[in-house]
Length: 407
Image 1 (spheres, rainbow, N blue to C red):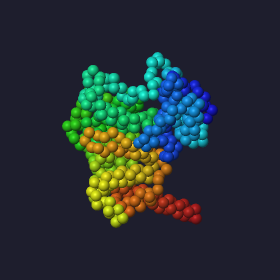
Image 2 (cartoon, one colour):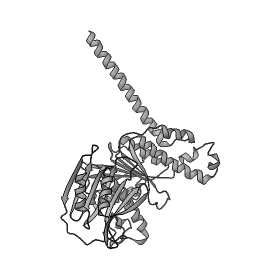
Image 3 (cartoon, one colour):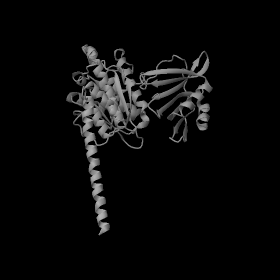
Image 4 (cartoon, rainbow, N blue to C red):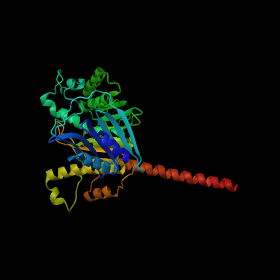
């Protein structure tokens, strides 16, 4: 860790912009830790923001304590990015503890910065910067100001981009990234995703927005052509039947109603998507199934039963994703205009499939079977059949070789 310590003492000063620590080795750790310089009572400290599921905890650390804490964190995390007005550095730590440090100098001029403790929130999309799609979608004025009545929508877009920023390292840099947005609707977030990945981060992307409303898709396609957004297309179609691509890196499904979310997650798993971002909506399916003698006194209250069924639906979806090799977080999103649902399921493909026994017992206990479980059973049956066929063929091949030896 000497390389990291030397790097920290080089960059932990008033010229630092941000340090981001990510890619935890276990699911028990915070998803992301970030640090920024802050002036507190005219003394320079470093404020650490620790994102633990839907909560963020803060620590104010003097220089030596900040270095000590970061070194401890880097024993449990794989990646660190350092952004400063004097340079930029990335740190990777392998399974065996090998540290790789890459640095590059910052050429751009230094601007004056606000190091106050309660500084104004910085959004990924600058609210003072003109963006064509924000203006056409009525979120920004022609002068480049956010429309007051649309500020919640602007915050929602930025919150969504933060979820992508957290997992940006999972998306390949050496080839085109394919992303499917199921149920894209008016495509506020689809355009924002393209702008962030292509324009701001310079990723090669092919983003497909899919929705059943022909008029909405036509409008979105016209806008994409107007902006010259190559690699962004919109198609009319449903989630279950879409076969337009063979490989997908990220699947986005926002407010897909009821079992439409299950079909989207199923498609994502079958594609082996590296990243899944899903905001479920209207989870009715389990509400009509759920039954348990012990819990019946609770289930007699319709509203309680409905909310419990919705939460259990999303928890089981998360468990099924983990059984398919995904590291899953349940995070708080900003409510949509037409629904109070604000849970986001984020899955990152990591391998190491979780045992299915636990959530299968829960399904038996509550007498439920979500659509995703049924869809994945079909996959498991095919996998088992394929493996059985392989064993038979391997056995026959061995028998044939033995017979040839005897002859």
